[in-house]
Image (cartoon, rainbow, N blue to C red):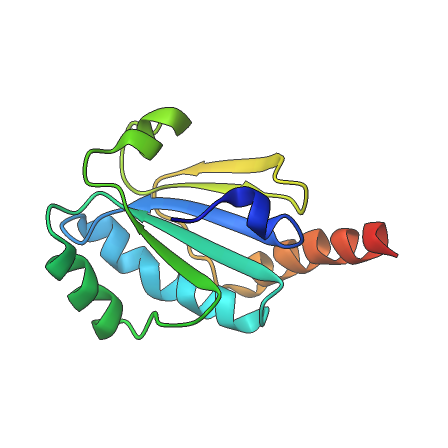
Amino acid sequence: SVQLVGLKDRVVIVSFWATWCEPCVQEFPSLVNLIREFKGKVVLLAVSADNSVEELKAFVKAFKADDPNIKIMWDKEQKVANLYGTEALPESYILGYDNSLIRKIAGVDKWDTPQAIEYFREIVDKKIKAAQ
C-alpha cells in the first residue's frame, strides 16, 4: 500500500503500465534512469495492470527496478487506473511536491533525455526553493 500523502515532499511520477504492454516495456528503462538521476528527489509510483504478481516480480527483477525510489503497485482490477481516468497504457502523471498535477503524458515518453532531465530539474528546483 502506497499513499501519495507519504510522498508529499518529493516530485512523483504515477505511471500506469503492464508487462504485456510493449510500449510500456520500451519506456520503463528510461523511467528507471530518470529516478536514479534524481537520487530520491523524484519518485516513481509504477501502477501495474498485470494479471499475476509473478509476472510483475519477474519484470521488476529483469529491469533491476528495486530502487527505494521506485514503488511498484499491483492494480490487477485497475481500480486506481479508473480513479485517474486512465484509458490506455502507458499513461503517466507528474505530480508536484504538493501532489498537484503538473502534467499528464498519454503514450510513450523518453524520460532520460537531456531535455527531460532539465524539465525535472526545474520542477525539483522549484520544490527546493519553496521549502526554504
